[in-house]
Image: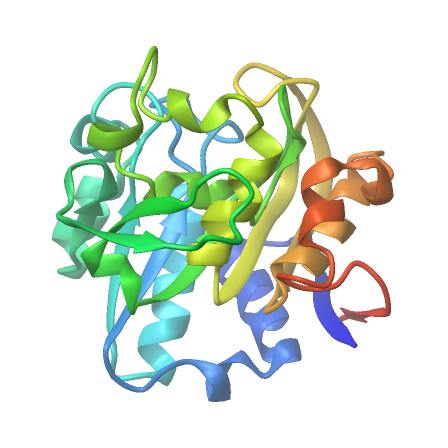
Length: 263
């Protein structure tokens, strides 16, 4: 049975701490190596299109309180350049203030991984820095134009280097012929080790310019399929009709027998 914490949002620090404590996350964080917080910074639009820097700082502080591992923030934006997006959304200021490393996955050195069982991406150029890191997916709860929802799993598109997968925009090649299958394949190569979803204010209708919907929640879990299942339900979708979740069920996590932890 997979557990997903569902906590009322009051502020990022207290609500994220509460959600992670319900999961017993402190004892499951690595004590050395690299932890990368992976927000959704698809472009320079303010939250809830993108992940609030305050949410990232709350996760950073939780990790620093419970591990001696290096904690960094990394993403590869969907349009524009990642350094510009970091600067526009306050991440550069956070990095300077807290002396943390910012990683641009779009320009990172890569290693080619192969998986003959992948649905589309039989090879994947993964940033070397991410390959063995503990990844915390930190998305906003949003609808998506192609996959219906973009939550913990779709957020992992950000690790795909734009210099490899760009077209009309930085990740364009991953959206054809099937965004859903690409989501599953990328998570086959590197699924999030922990997912924390900012559902304080969701974005409905469209992932770049939808309607704001106050949810007042933080979600968290170690099973990204379970997290996305609950998140998709909150957005009004039937998870068992979402192709990427159907494909991921039993492979990357589980849609059924989810224990919801509240507090």
